[in-house]
Each structure stands twice: as C-alpha cells, then as structure tokens.
Image (cartoon, rainbow, N blue to C red; front, side, top):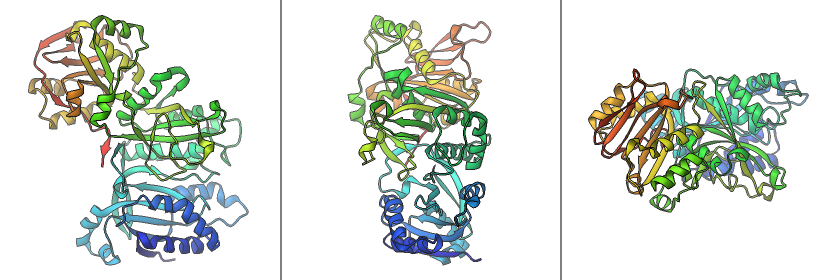
Length: 508
C-alpha cells in the first residue's frame, strides 16, 4: 500500500478534503460536505491566506489506532483504521523540495504544524499541533511544547499546544483535556510520558463504579485522580471556596506557565452544560489595562490591617481583566475568552450562564506551597517592616511560580540587575521550584521593569521563622535567611530597576 501526497492552497482545500473524506472514510458526498463545513472550515477560516497544505494518506495515527483496537474494532460496524494527515506550511511547497536536502532548512522554517483527520464521523479532527503563527490572529501569550513529526519522510518540529476533538465514545472533553496536558508535559520534561486513551480509561477503573466505555465523561475528582496517577501533585480549586479570589489564583498559575484544566458549567444557573477545557495562556497587558487596574479588598485580616496601618496600596497583576487562551475540543484551537465568560465564543443559547466552577492544577509533586499561601506570604512580607516601604506607596505585584533553573538562566543572560544582587542570587542554593514576587509600579511595569524582588521556596510549607524565604529586596536593601542563625540578614544595596521575568509564556 503506497502513500499518496497532495499539495494544495487554502482556496483548494475544500474540494480536496470533501473528495478525500468521501473516498477514504466511505461516506456519502452530502455528509462529507457537512463535515467540511461544520468541522473543518472553522479551523481553516482562521488561517493566514498563504498557508500551503500537504495532505498524506493513508496515515497511521497512534492515538486513533489505540482507540480503534481498544474499542472501535470490537463493534459490528465497519470502522476504518487509517487516517489522513494535513501538514501546514507558511509558503508554497512542492514535492521536489522534500527530495532536495538543500531545501530542508527552508522547509523547516516554513513548517506550522499538522492535523490528523480520523474516520470517527462526524468528529473527524484528531491529534493536532498547530503553531499560533499559522493564524491571522496570534497576539497572545501561551505555553507551548515542541513536537516532532515527518512530512514526506522529512523530519520537522512544531511549537504549539496539543488539540483534538472528542470522538464522544472513547474520549470526551475530560479525556481529551487529560491527553492534551500529558502530551504537553511529555514534550517538555523527561519525567512525564504521553498517555493514550486506553491508558486513561484503564487508570480510572480503580476509582470508578461503572463502565468506562462508551465514555460518559469524568468529574473533577476523577480527572485529578488520573493526573495524580500520571505523576502530578494535583491541586483542585473551587469557586465556591475561593469566591472573588478564584480567578486571581487561576491567573497566577497561568502566569506561572502551567496549563490548567477548567471545569465549566451552568447547572447552578439552571442549565445543563458540563464541559472541560485546558487554559494555556492569556493576551498581553496594555497600558490601559494597567491604568484601569483597581485595588481589590483583601480577605486576609492580617494583610488588610497592615495595608490600612501602613497606608500602602497593593495592586495585583492577576486582577487584570483580560482574555485567556482556551483549548476547546468543540472549537478550533486557541480560543480567547474572559474568565467571567469562558464560553463567549459559543453561539448556542444552551451555553448561556456558564462559569468556571473548578480548575485543576497539574503541579510537580514536590511543590508543597500553593498559590494562595504563597501570595499571602509575599504580600505579608512586603507590608511588614523589613523592606521599609514608605507610607502611601502604591505597589504593583506580579507573583508566579517557576523553576530555579529557568530563573537563574534568565538572570545569567540579563544585564539589567545590579551585578552584586544578581551574583548573590545566582550563587544561592535553591530548590527545584520557586515562587517569585516582582515588585513594581504602574509606571515601571509598563516598561516591563521592577524595583523589588521576593523569592521563596515552593517546596517549603512551613512559613514561620522565614523558613520559606530565599532572598528579598526593594530599593536600597535586600535580605536573606542565614542558615546558621535562622535569622534575616540585611544588606544595603541599591537594586535599581531591572527587567521582569517573561519566560513562562511564549509570545508570537
């Protein structure tokens, strides 16, 4: 059986795919046309007009083959086992280029990802990774992994976030979200491996009292259990518990470069929708966003008292109201929506009143200090007397989680820090993960600058006696915890202004 390759442009793709779906998936032309209009055209309408398509078939896709052998092959109906693969390039390509080694570098510069079409009619969109650069609108920040594949037998790599539609039988939105998150982490860290649909189903047998196939979806606890079994220290946040700080915490984890799984529902508002989507980024902050940001009431009694006593105002970067990037298996990848209206891109009134009611954080298992406690600790430290912040000061705080290795690598390349302060941080022993609080002002943050810094140990849940503090500084002094005396050591040093850390999320 030989592989057929077709190369076409965006205006030609409709005709090619309608005929291919009809022939390869054995469906009538009328159904093939409906599949294209409803399932595929919404994706391609968002593409840049000069995108070139390379179509290859038959294609063996590992994710669909897993579902095929574990489920579809056992049914009476004649289910196909081969797929169609679409690859995307930013410029026109020809077959000859894939046979000329001198052209490979240029082809790799043009490569923008792939999409698998599987024979699960009508939900044919399977495993996909599409670079945001393929889209006409890509002015957002998000987490991305690097994924290797081949086109016409030549190796390529694309940066993006995994996406797939649900087939409604072996995978629903919950399984698709778990699969996508695992694909992402496996592309970034050797500790994690990709998981196939059958592995998700098998894992959940241990915590389920009913059959797993056909899938009826998963609740938030089942998803948390699955991710824990796949190697994460899973943390679940409820809107009922955290109230108006719920979205602030979600934003803090996104700022930390972690893909979250958000549970969306309108059942509490009289609806019937229950849905799950990964949240993977947000759009950038404008000067107007920063100017309009208001101080939020602090629910912690100690922080509220210190704010009033010191006459200091703290505004939080995570309170900026902006669009977040969602990977929805019912829609093309990289949808933008406000957290207060997470499915605003749906046209159906059935989705009215939907809200994010839970979100799930796939934390590294050795991270013991969560965002809620870390943010409270950093704000409290700011307001106590060590840093001598003048009364009446308005502070802009940006708090995020990152790895110490990534942060030190950023420092080693950045020359904006005071050299002595920079060297001190680089020479300080740190855990694998740290919480970083950048202290700035509205004026400074518009230039992506800060003048204060607090770094705490994300693996230390004991916060008394400055156990979690690694280093802190503001204006003309900085502190660190002496391991011998367990006391704070003060140094006089002008920090000046320095660049903020922006490596958690990638811009396009």
